[in-house]
Length: 307
Image (tube, rainbow, N blue to C red; front, side):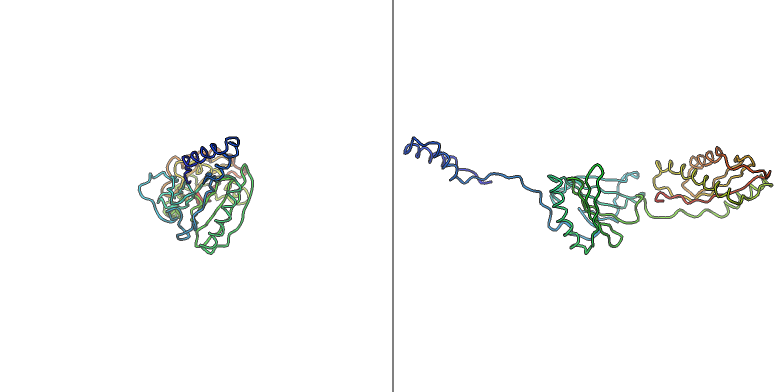
């Protein structure tokens, strides 16, 4: 803002008052109008032009698919302030996978003056994003406690998303295949010898047990699967990326009570989770039968946080 020469104005006014003392107010207005005044106005936040300078996987100095070293093993989110290079965006948040700490999403945010100003900036970003990466963006809008408007598009397993939530402007990059926040992968198969040994031990203990068949066994298997999933969901609070394969063996008597339960599982499933599954099955009442023979069934499950 340019400075006002108040000394010059004062000298001019005093000279004028000596010449025309009866009209001081008019002269004051004339003097202020003639002076080189500069009135500061509220400046709108300007978006970088263009914002999208790197690859489709990179934004705010980070790229999805790269790894961050030195983080605590339990860390899944990192947040920090942005420097002026990325103005008007003030904060960046990273989601990292477990256990490799691969960056799976990068989100930059800033608060605009109003929801209208945010939508105006969103239009600019939409054009830049389409031009920079050749994306065809889809539009989405909905209202919950806030008004959300956004655009998104993907290429090469990378999702780009820009949005306004009321006056909050957001730019986000996401890497596909990490919806659960865990590294992609599969639980190893159960050792065949372990299954054979367990089956042989149960048959020796209950020689009269017969393989359960028919509609009732399907219902019983569904109940056992639900019990195991419930126990597994509790274990995820301590091990959010635990993947496992389990086989649950149960010997059910004619009254519908479990006389024996064995849980085989891959490495990583601790004794506490196995015991929770065992206890849940033993507390459950299954279908009764007039047949005096014991019924044997096994339920095979793949437990995965992404399912």
